[in-house]
Image 1 (cartoon, rainbow, N blue to C red):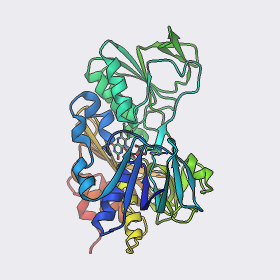
Image 2: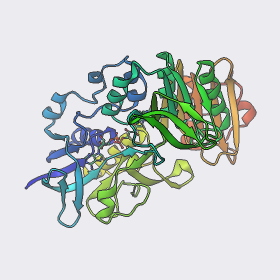
Image 3: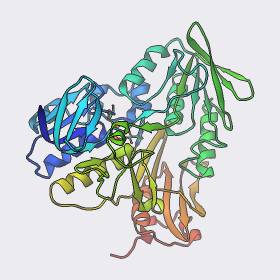
Amino acid sequence: MRSFDILIVGAGHGGANCAVQLRQLGFAGSIAIIGEEPELPYERPPLSKDYLAGDKEFERMLLRPASFWADRNVTMRMGETVTTVDAAARTVTTAAGATIGYGDLIWATGGAPRRLSCAGHDLAGIHAIRTRADVDALKDELAPAIRIAIVGGGYIGLETAAVLSKLGKQVTVLEAMDRVLARVAGPALSHFYEAEHRAHGVSIRTNETVSAISGADGRATGVVLADGETIPADIVIVGIGIVPAVAPLLAAGAAGSNGVDVDDHCRTSLPHIFAIGDCAAHTNSFAGGAHIRLESVQNANDMATTVARLLTGNPKPYHAVPWFWSNQYDLRLQTMGMSLGYDTTVLRGDLAARSFSIIYLKAGRIIALDCVNAVKDYVQGKALVEQGIRVDPAVLADVDVPLKAHHPVA
Ligand code: FAD
């Protein structure tokens, strides 16, 4: 049986970065990464942005070249899926039947796209956007398609809508809630993005529930809404979140439900097993102490560093301000902090000028910023969120006063 001092399951942002950090911090033991996808670790964000648009080649998305992993003596086992974990024996088994031993196991498996469960959910022509293979399959069908229905008005749905409308497609976004981005942003930002998409010819329909996918000859032809209306579609794209890929860990006895529970060093409830990234449910002080999963590159990378530090004898609890970005048309949205539970918002700048920030406060303290084409606010806002600074909203709104003027005095 092959055994590794550190075995990482999942070759995405978290898994890859954990191996990078371990070597950077001087870990000299054996490391292997097992990944279900056939590709070496790559950046996921371009999948719904420049890769879908055809503006970025896949090779430019690799997190590190193949030589990097060989030079650092990291064993890459791509195209293998871990199906069971035995925490007592400290082994995992793969779908192909291999048993692999570990000293410490790092679970970095992200999640699988949530699928529709309604009638017609399994017709051809229905796509998700999570992996390179997903996007390649979509691109293969794009040329003859004219009408595209996107189920879900979150970041992935909206980024995809922006790319496909630029490619000349007739795009309809169907969102179940009363506004897009409802889970992650305040109404002002949602309505700004709805208006932007409509100005680009995208039909944004909120309060719409999908009741079925209609089809002919085994292929989707439209999305049937709750009131019986059918939105005709040559392709249906579903962007309604992920289901964390933690079944083997939960079956092994790890605590968790929506993901696997971890403490502030990313330890699961099982000995020598850690979890990081999209699949790790943790208590986040920037979300008011809520137990949440974050789905962002920042979170995956910072959790990877947390585990690498612990395993190299220099532990530091996970305490990182969440940040995120989204590119749609010529708009670069950058978010800092989490707006969850805000009671006041301040608009800084001008929505019509398409360069502004929305600042979220809770009990007088700054907890988050959504910055659209406003990189200075984004950069200077970090310290304000980190320290939970109190600033008079009227002063915050004054664009002539840079946010750094409110930085805490060192
Ligand atoms: P992943 O990167 O998903 O990697 C998990 C890997 O584990 C996958 O390759 C999976 O196949 C593999 N795996 C799963 N189960 C097993 C198993 N049992 N055995 C072996 N391997 C397994 N974040 C941002 O911050 N900004 C953005 O603009 C942004 N855009 C995005 C656009 C798209 C289209 C998507 C899908 C995500 C985007 N994200 C963005 C989110 C970001 O990509 C994720 O938060 C990040 O990839 C999480 O890293 P991870 O390592 O936890 O999981």
